[in-house]
Length: 520
Image (cartoon, rainbow, N blue to C red; front, top):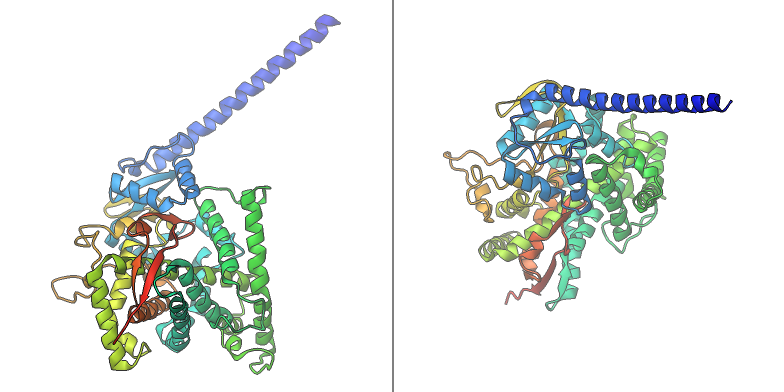
């Protein structure tokens, strides 16, 4: 009996050993096959430079570490400086070609999106749509087209021109806040601009008054800092997922997951009552409701709910969140960097202030008419975007078929991304790229081609909020220049110590000392 038992044990042990060996062999074989297939499929990419990789995960560890340090933009920029204008990184076994030449980026996006050879990557689309629900930037093809068609008219320059007065009102509130802080007192301008841009986009989309002292009966009050914190949390989760974190990790009992679900609930509780009301107005076809403000009835949300039946409750909630996020940080941080660069460049500051003073005297203020005369202020904003492209390193596409980019064969399934910071400092395109020279955007001589302005994207997918951003930024900068002189508290370190959540921002919140001007 003992021998029989020991024999069975020996047989079981041998069988287990054999099964383990086969399992290891199978895994090794699968890895080896995937490596061989990858090498064969992406053979044409082998001649491109690449950062050092983990043998299995590729460059995912470096990217996730950069996201955790809030330095992803810096990683892409440094790789561009080290490896050149085109290099390849590996997200596990999937390659992404990174570009940093402005013309190549522009041509690649425009041509690729037009002929269908480029679409947003599946990983990126999933990350966008997983914030709360399906949104415009997370869709492609016909699903993207009907959304874009619905919103395009609302954000056109002609539609936005009628909002110039209330945008000016929102900017004047910032001026009053700064006046209360004078004589010279430190003010962190980045949170101030966040409040400005959030109030403007909330008014446009959700019909919430820009006046901070006014109330809205259609839903919970806008608490800017709480809203901004919630938006930052879901934005940070998007960035982690876009660079390699798995979607299911949001269900783990971690602090990141708990913060995400709390932020999501806050956003939904804020927006849902307004979406429900907009849908009710649309379904009842009523435009005269005494209990509903005229501002809400004229909001984009109500117009879209009435115009596009494909939008339901969940997609309208998700789209509203997308527009609040897109319409806040981008313009706010860009304004902070513009204020900083004006302080660091006295010649530009003085020229800009002289132009604003002359325009003010000619038109009696900053209004829809006088804004047309402020080309130099718009050039300052463009130059700021060139040096501080706030969305750098957070966007990518994917080739749908074999294609050619800048003379290089790119196989089907390859990711295509770009470093806007590196592109903005290309010396072959922008002379003296480290200098702040707004004049470069005003050169209309026949000898020079127009400079590529790619920060708002290109083609059909050009940024929906470009006109709004330029209108807000031009108005706000002009008013600041009219009323104040200023200096950076921390000097150049304010534009050197940067971080990235979803977008790039000044880590010190850009403290500035303002001095009220004396015109006597």
